[in-house]
Amino acid sequence: MSTRTLKRRVLAGAGALSLALTGGVVALTGPAQAATKTTPVPVKCVAPAPQPGANGNQDYTITVPDTAKAGETVPITIDPGETPVIPMFTIDTVNTIKAKLLVGGVAQTVTSPAVPSHQEANKKSDPPAFSGTIKIPDGSEGTTVQITIDQVVTDADLGGTVYTTTCTPDPRPSASVGSIAVEALPKDPVTTKLTPNSGKAGTAVVATGANFPAGPVTCSALLAGAATGDTGTGTADASGAATCNITVTKKADAIKIDGSVPPAKPFVFVEEQAGVKNPVDIEVLPGPLALGPKDGQPAVSFGSVTVNGKAQSVFGAFNAATVQDFRGGTLGWDVTATRTPFLNQTTGHAMAKAQLGIQPSCTVTNPDSPSTCTAGAPGAITETPMKVASQAAGGDELTGGEFAVGGAAMLQLPPFMFADTYQSVVTFSIA
Image (cartoon, rainbow, N blue to C red; front, side, top):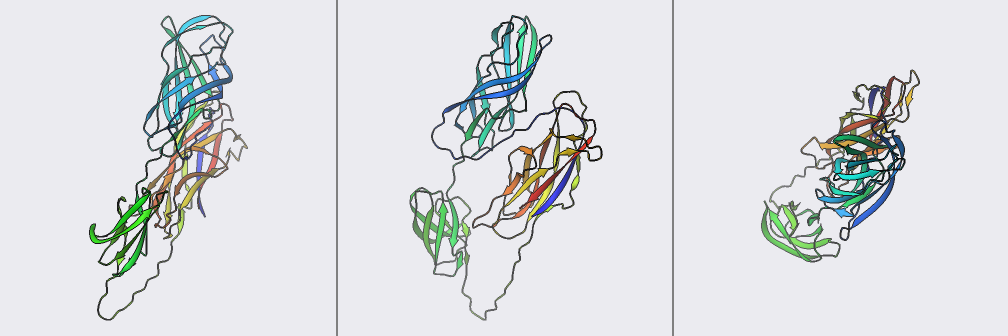
């Protein structure tokens, strides 16, 4: 395992919003149905003067489909429940609610129609339920998209003058108030392996595949993409695993189970040649799995913020670290991140409630890399290792390559703290 240390600095400021970004992988079966969930959400509400604000729980009842497709627009119903705000006087207004949501980490707003409201003095307001739509994020296939509340704004129109009440979850965003399982993409039939994958004329080869319809299958030998005339037969079981037997009698450079998507699996045809044979041997040694630079990156400054007693967030970016996998095998890897508390070791001041989040990214930097990489789910970096990027093991396929791992960063600060300079050390590790 190798490690890389990144230093992050921030000048003392204000504003605490706690990060709650989640995701997960699920298997999907059955038709989509509506799922309703009620979640008590701790909120802090700021009301227009002279109405005082209030803190408390607000029960949000959210109805969304159980399942959906990536990129699909789906219905959502929001019942806000009683707010903790208790008006000082009786009033009739026309209210519009704007629920600012995070859908799989993507900001979306659902707006209610303008509805007349009669509010009694000294009684909690109970806004009506309203419906709208949200879009399932692209690229979320095979995951469970979590819905959280980032903020709810109510505009009350009184004779043409609009009074705004803002309720913010604490921590912000809220815990999940609903979830939608996103359907996985259908899997194409593929040829997975040849045994053996080389030989001379007369070699019997077993081709295996995955995702085929159950029943008989056929397979073909190819040369420069054209069929050579050698074919074979086999079967696919109920799970889609196919086995096909073929004997190679003519020169071929690939074999595939018919119906599978390209590419076919390569086959090395050994031609008999007359004359004196002279074997040539070479040993290929494995290279390292490395994360760099080992000496760390320059500190990324989040700039400066000023204490104002309110929640604030600041944004930055983690510099891309290089991943080199030269092991020449079929293994995968994971990059994880941890951090230390925000401290000023000279003064002893600390920001215990500060939270640091990352929206990871991972890109292939060498086009000849046999593998791709996957960025981890957005979330908070803590003392517990958080997966920020990975390369899947290849099974029978070669893995490796060169990659860049980084991501957008968000720092959420408490509303009050010592004015000072603080530092947290973020460590990225690979295994």
